[in-house]
Image (cartoon, rainbow, N blue to C red; front, side, top):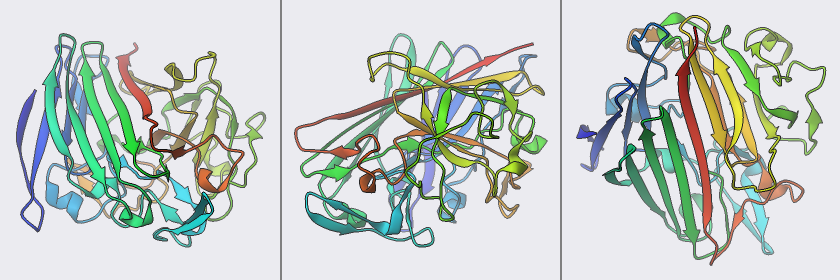
Length: 347
């Protein structure tokens, strides 16, 4: 594990870059600006390490604007319809930064702030614990919210993210990481050939603004069905705009805090495999539909479908949908959530 300077913000705030590595050739780099995972190198079936995420090598590129590459997202990941919700009889108004809706925490969400960072080392892992205090009223949300996000790279080739939060007023909370993956390496083109499995029998259909309709619809007989492996590009043209939907995970234990295997992706080109385990009730599949080639880095041009996201989270617009799993954190409660990204190879 090492720490290095990663530049500074326009106001002079210093930003650091942390490099985590294990003895199996896995290397993860992240910064305390936005909790962004800037790079992950993983060996292929021949033992050759390669980049498997979309991101930049310089802070200036992130400050110049990007589609949430690798970042921590909050206070509320995904969308809230109309940028408003009611809580305990009071209406709260948020920024409408995605058409008529609120997206990923607003104009200055958790992805655009500097977190306090504390590196650590244990017998089986190295990591960084990030802490941020989101003050009462920030981006329109109530309550002073203290958030911890702990990144750990283990000797078992797992990148683990443990989230924890407390508040002094009731507030919606939905945290995730927004890494874009391309297991072949983004310089090798689209993710259409990646073989995806999602352990979900239902998904959330959405309206034109990508707000859930409230229905939990069966994936059976639809191009949304990834219960068995399918290439991502096999049926994507049957989905208007591409995949950008939340799946309802089929948790198979009686303990909701247990980690469950939510998704598995295999790249036939490199042999790399990514498994996603989580305690969350949903996972958002996004296939880089809005990438347009205007951004590039590390020899790759980020065209449409150059990367995919598997964002573990609660359901979009839950503050306005009482039937969805609860996303309100109240004083005296502690929010906890864990997601694990496990890397391996197949012949």
